[in-house]
Image (cartoon, rainbow, N blue to C red; front, side, top):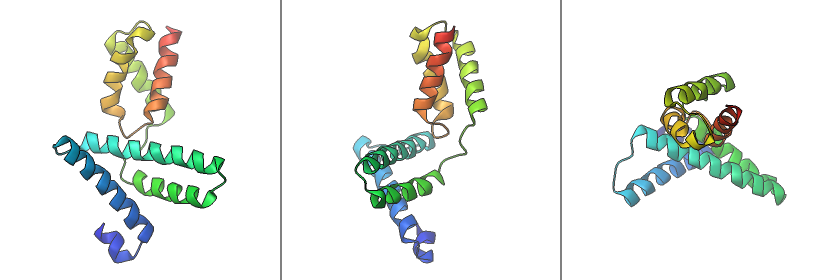
Length: 139
């Protein structure tokens, strides 16, 4: 936040303040300090919210508001670890299915539980869920 203030980067400063406020709000609500995995979850949720907003703004023909959300996503993503490639995600899903002994779509919860800890903040959990569902339906 200090570097954004010193550089006079108002857009980055605004996004950083939003991130800090979201983290602080959850810490106050739960009365616990968030660990790194929980913070990654907060950041992923913020990105998902902004993508939903972009979709709505585009439907409402508001490219000015959409541009603001896109800029915020770009800043938030700088605080996330490198995203998993499609091949890495597929390998992680296959490994989780094998290690959990999943045999059908009923075992999706087990598989997602194994993947969630490793993929939070590194992949869109909606895409992960779809990949797991496809793989389990193919069994």
